[in-house]
Amino acid sequence: MKAMFFPEPYRAEIVERPVPVPGCGEVLLRVRAAGICASDVAAFQGKHNVRRPPVITGHELAGEIVAVGPGATDWAVGDRVAVEPHMGCGTCAYCRRGQYHECPEKRFIGVDDWIGAFAEYVVAAGCMCHWMPADMPYDEGAALEPFCVGLHAARRAHVQVGDRIAVLGGGTIGLMTLLAARLAGPECFFLSEPSAAKRAVASAWGAVTIDPRAQDVIREIQDATEGLGADVVFVAVSVPEVLRQGLEACRRIGTLVIVASFYEEAAVNARQIQVRERTIVGTSMYTADDYRLAIRLWQAGRLDLCPLLTERIDLMDAPAVIAALARNDKPDNIKTIIGFP
Image (cartoon, rainbow, N blue to C red):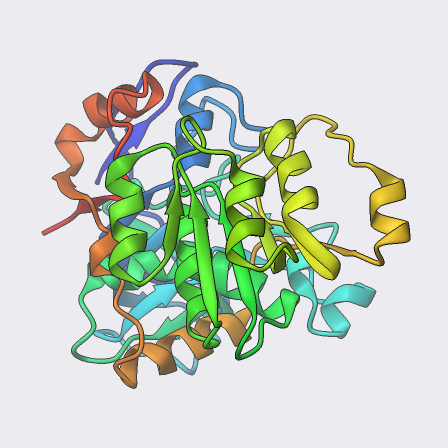
């Protein structure tokens, strides 16, 4: 099979690898669509904390089951599935409580020797697979993964009807978070993002958009909320100054949600949290509940991921595209999907 391999930082090449064989409880999928994540770009650069060259990475995927290993009794050849690309150990305290996304021994597709979705075939545990509706395109099935990051964040924040919410950072995860939080029926919602193209997507959903290069983010949010600030602020870009903005844009007794992955320390003003009774929430990944809810929302016609799918490319073009993303040659890109025949 063909796959995109990162032999070392800043090198990507198409290679031939044997088709993997599913083990006990596993299935073999023919990948039909795979999304390129910012973490994949970081892996290409050699900067990611767990996805390190040499590696075949990729974890946003949907495909068709072509072989079933022993014990994977819930699945059959021909099933169309979206894959939740992580699994816990199954025995620790977190896994026993259904909180396997926080398992200390959690494993990921596309890390170490587990070949990821930037390949024609991939093995996954049966418990990681979710049936896709027959009419759901594979591209949207792959995009369920980043959407579920945003959905999990919105659920962790307990966004309610009538809330005023703000998302700081309009990359893929920021827009997915905005889309998910919007489903709860907020009174108004804001997006702070320098890219005009990304602001346009949010504006089409009804968001009040802010260009942080030309506008005062905190003042814009406060002026639009009678000086109160937002009930819930999502920080979706790992910039310490944006984290500070998020805290100031959050109203008293409001909630600040950290969605972005901060790989370096970023300080917040503890006094402003304490005296104004703000709640700080961390959120990471998702669970099967998020996937099942996302699929139900799609079936009900309430979820359309197509506006966030910027481009579709072939696997053979992927090395050049990921290099361009690493150079930031595509600042308006939201989500690139690698399509497979």
